[in-house]
Image 1 (cartoon, helix red, strand yellow):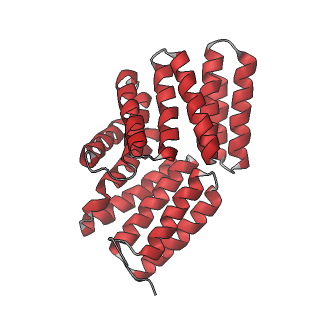
Image 2 (image 1 turned 135 degrees about the horizontal axis):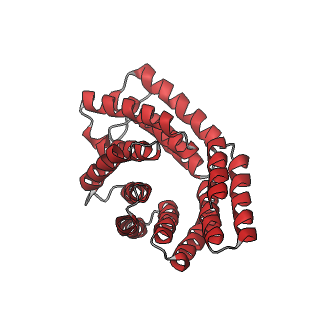
Length: 261
């Protein structure tokens, strides 16, 4: 029997969703999806609105981690529909932030940015877990839109917030995003420092996807400086790591990055 001990969600289900996020952060995406799918089925069975909306949100986040952005949009749109139909306002900032990010990564940059800005405003001052990560999603999307200056501002805000809230995993992500932002502004030395700091923290925490993304960033920096051998080595490390995690979408993106560097 599933019981609710605290908060709006059913604890046996919520614990599974958070376990799936932790597994994904370490690069165990297959196991993460299996845990989330099982909890999603249980949430549907017990007909608990908050838990079912959170289940769709969780699947959307995991699809983002896999690099399957169109699948992420579909799941997060279902989460938003459930949230609005049942007036589950507590979930709104997180759902809209991740939906906005997935849209931006799949080509819907204007709609994505609008959702991300609204989510960042709604979460401001709440000191909720993950707010810094929402802000770095906005920073990444601004970089995709070619807004490097604003992207740096938001990346720095996200990094500061993750540090103040002592979210070390999100700090590693924010450092990597700030590295990409500084590279876009023509500050390769600053970008390299950020990537190395992010890589060191990610390796300490066992966050293989973040470490691999840092290798991609370093590969681009090396290529821009004409250090072809170092660039090839960084891209190869990233591709090998993503392949070991069974993330073919990210392997393909590494190949594109290497070819265009």
